[in-house]
Length: 315
Image (cartoon, rainbow, N blue to C red):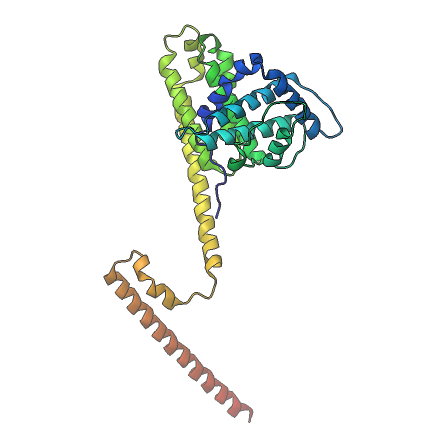
């Protein structure tokens, strides 16, 4: 049976938006220097035989530490989605490691490497997400990256100046990249695609009066949206059908080949077959068994008669 191992629910746009809100603070706050030293140390510790540096990635790392501190400040808030925000933290952490070409094992181990900062740095790195550890595989990482890119466009589109035809084409390319990705857990991807389609429906209504956005709607037609809905549902139906066939194939193997017919008959309460119909089936089965026994006895007698005839002929 195919099992799902990762659920994207709650990550987009909620966790991403909370992470984004800390960008301004991460650029001007007094703790930036301390966090920068931690990120520099982390980069050196995870890189092997290379010391490639990227300012934008360093800024993401600093922002991630502010995000972790923010998560820690919400630990007593029963309404805060602690688990989901920790998952997003682990995603960003793995993203940084991947982009730097570094290596530190599991996401949990990378978290420990980050927390083991230089002794001269007098700032605490919370362990709040240790109890919500999530190791994100490469395929899942790619899906979240695409979702991150899509929601970056969605956030940009809140500013009318960004509702250009070029940006809309790029947004659609991101959507189709997610739609066509051969991800193992398609049911969860389907949920995310449907959420994005709803956003597109909203654009169809709200951008009509926007001087820039109304031109971009030429690339976001009603037919395109309906086609995407059909594609999503068709793909999901095909996959669930394949999963069902796989279950049907594996079930006899799981139960074993020595299951007796009497066990099946005794399990009538779980079949959903009406009692009268079941009585007829039992009677048919019983008669069929008797007929088979009769035919078998006839074959034996017939064979013995022929054998005796051959013995007489050769004697």
